[in-house]
Amino acid sequence: MPRVAVPSYVYVLVVVEHEGRFLLIHEAKHGQGWFLPAGGVSPGETLVEAVLRETLEEGGVRVEPTGILRVEQSWPGSADGFGRFRFVFTARVVGSADPKRKADNHSLEARWVPAEEIPAYALRHPEVIEHVGRVRSGAPTLPLDGYALACFPIVAR
Image (cartoon, rainbow, N blue to C red; front, side, top):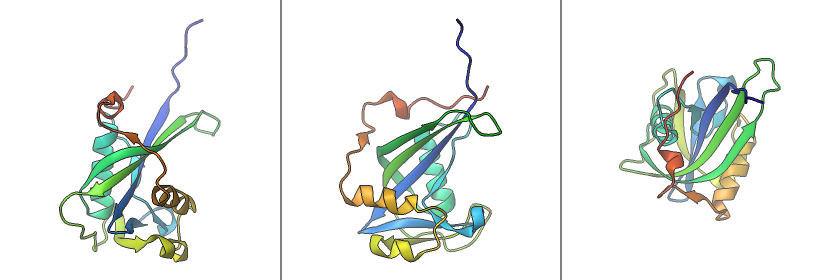
């Protein structure tokens, strides 16, 4: 029996730690809550390229991905019939750590926040606390060195 292609969306979410603080984004969308740098992977873009782009667009900070903390998958079940894949990356700052201060269509601002202060923010979703907690506890990550996962671009069909 032939396999049927499942139309899917691919997303990245990035946990960036710098000097004991985490990069939070005050989103321009999604109810203007605070979240981690995140977004969809564009056709022709690799997962790593999406990490770099989303973190720079939303947070104003250049990063180097250091590992994959988690991979999430959901099969079609919603009204749109699409599957979803989300890759949660860890990253470190490359160059200036000065976050975005001026609003645009990507975000309103970005801040470096100590982990213990994050619950006081109006978060888009409490998973921010969960992911930051994983990083703080030293949860294992899949290193990017030598893995082809970071090299394949997403192709639109």
